[in-house]
Amino acid sequence: MGGYLLNTMNYHISQRAASLAPSLTLAISAKAKQLTAEGQDVIGFGAGEPDFDTPQHIKDAAIKALNEGFTKYTPASGIPELKDAIVEKFQRDNGLTYKASQIVVSCGGKHSCYNIMMAICDQGDEVIIPAPFWLSYPEMVKLAGGKPVILDTTDATQFKVTPEQLRGAINDRTRIFILNSPSNPTGTIYSPAEIKALGDVCVEKGVMILSDEIYEHLIYGNAKHQTVASFSSEHQAHTIITHGLAKAWSMTGWRLGFIAAPEPIAKRINAIQSHSTSNPTSFAQKGGVEALRGSQHHLKEWLPEFDRRRTYAYERLNAMPGVTCVKAQGAFYLFPNISGTGMQSTEFCDQLLERSQVAAVPGIAFGSDDYIRISYATSMANIQKGMDRMDAFVRSLHS
Image (cartoon, rainbow, N blue to C red; front, side, top):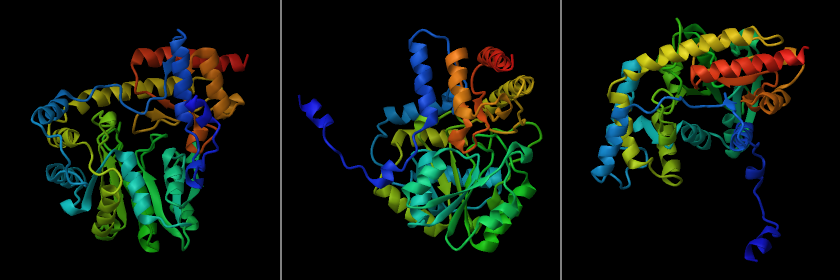
């Protein structure tokens, strides 16, 4: 009876919460799970996480910490051992020097991004976001009271924003430019020269760069990752790097992210975190130390396999009538253009799932309705079967 009465109440919902867009990725995932529960053989291309397990030595470190009773609160910004390992990572991989006081460990890369918005944006401040974008960026900006300013790109430029576009979007209210390379959802990697040119504009205009580098180690062919913070001390002073252990170490559920920032910003992010989540999980942090300091051998196995899947899916997609696809060089996504089929992304993905039992993510979720996102973080057998089904589906539209 009480539950029934509660359902009739008119609850007040904040404008902040009401403004958030529903997640199309979750909707597609829920629909795919429903069809699977009904006994249908659904091939999922929606995964935003590696299909490989967390390397055993990392799990062992967390298990050891748990068994030794490392289960209490830690400093809000992370244990000193992990912050030191992150400082070492930036020196080793990127040639960057940071102090431990410039590092904040968070409950995932998403949490790191959110903390940055909360620390920098006031009501009405603007954040420049190139599209296609990771779907949470605009929603985080709105939660912080800011205004997302979207810069559209297409496959004609490999989804890269130009310095001229960036310069034209900057005004007195601009606080942050989001740079995500390698990119989710496109897999695009900006060249070092392209990164520097965008950084130069931000340095000149006094705009902070949120450089999301969580896919840094998942790159293929002759592509090269170079962080925007590495070009000069001024570039570093204008950059907040957000990173995490989810993708290259397959630790998505561990919820460990981190930022490297100018000290005044890191200090404020630490304060925000201390009053919201407090510290990331204690024993997970010990696993994080092992991830950064231990063997990286797993990447020698994962990268060739991801590359094999990437090439196969790319070739199959480009052989489909009405579909074209850029050969992305990073992450584990392809972002094919399906506008030649006569459909936009939501209808295409709905029909693909209903008629062919293949789950993909509509590009409209990432701000680009002529595309869909395909994740190749699944087995080659699944990719082959899914591509066969998608090929037959697309050809049926042209028959």
